[in-house]
Image (tube, rainbow, N blue to C red; front, side, top):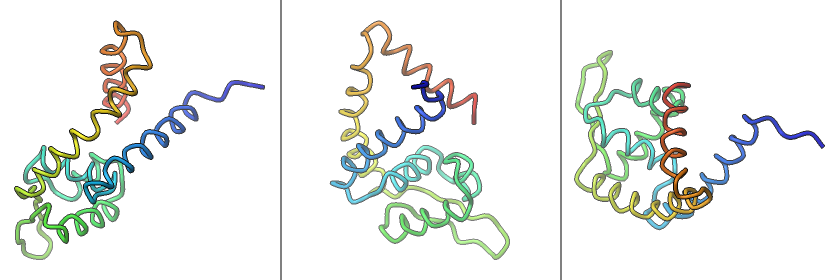
Length: 137
């Protein structure tokens, strides 16, 4: 039986991790996509929908759906703008607090992943994955 291609294995791994994230984040009332969008908005106050979409690697329409959901949950706020001008998004205090709590909840997943590697390779693996993501983005 041939070994599955590396991209397929990475997609499969991503799905497994996303399911674990979904379970951990459900206690906070957000989905994985909402958490990731909130993290981008919290880390880049004033981000536009287009920049959010690029950062999340989704369409502007998908980013719009996420911002609509987060606005409805009062986790983010937006600037008022005239038609045709970009809208800027900001995390609310409640959004930043939820982001902090949810991020703490995900630490067990981080540790579970890194424990799969020898201690001397864990930091290199973390850095390697982040480098790969940045290079391919």
